[in-house]
Length: 248
Ligand SMILES: Nc1ncnc2c1ncn2[C@@H]1O[C@H](COP(=O)(O)OP(=O)(O)OP(=O)(O)O)[C@@H](O)[C@H]1O
Ligand SMILES: [Mg+2]
Image 1 (cartoon, rainbow, N blue to C red):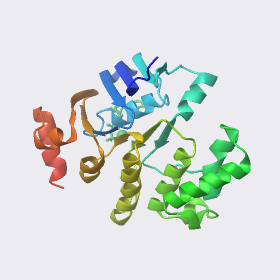
Image 2 (image 1 turned 90 degrees about the horizontal axis):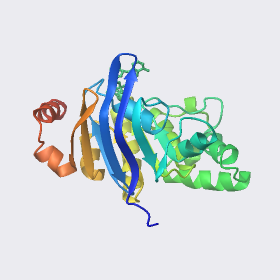
Image 3 (image 1 turned 90 degrees about the vertical axis):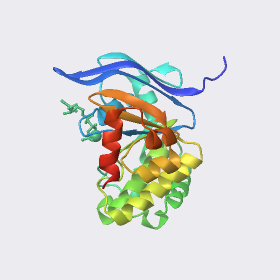
């Protein structure tokens, strides 16, 4: 069977938190090598969608497939599929009591059963790539926010994920650190990494994203090519949102 273009298919996904309808009939297909940026007001469901794609949140109905495989609810198959999805959050979620190098080698050794020396070699290459090889023996608290976030990206990449999810990876960073993280992400996009990125960094979206999804009230209310979204959004809601964030 020919490999389909689509890597991620979100199909009619609904998610409830009790009475709160957080995701409403969400459909989204992301092709291999594509970068989709998700924008939208606070509480619109952006993080919930990301967490659902990574199965950190169970969905209430609908299906999510990654590389043709439906995400199972639990068990070993879930752990394997979850390892296919790298995720970088707003808050730095490195293991505090492990060095940067240990943070990056842990998954490959424990989950992928990689030999320690190989995991170390690969980790060093990744740390070089994100520009923090000199920090390999430091602990997370000894790094700046931007460096920690780059370490988190290296740690995710070490698992060779099929998809990278980023949920506002720069929103907790000081301005001077934002660029160093975005630069790494732009480079990943150039190399053809499939990425779903929640971010209000419009420069990044313009530079790296093929499409932008605008969420409001639990729905994707607009999904358009990046140029189209910024130049001629279809919906009034997206226009209002854009004028607000571009005014900043
Ligand atoms: N664990 C939870 N339990 C109950 N309600 C939740 C939970 N997580 C999120 N919600 C609710 O679901 C809705 C969507 O939240 P979500 O975090 O996905 O929004 P968001 O678009 O990421 O917002 P932000 O831009 O502020 O990060 C919100 O109304 C939120 O309060
Ligand atoms: Mg969020």
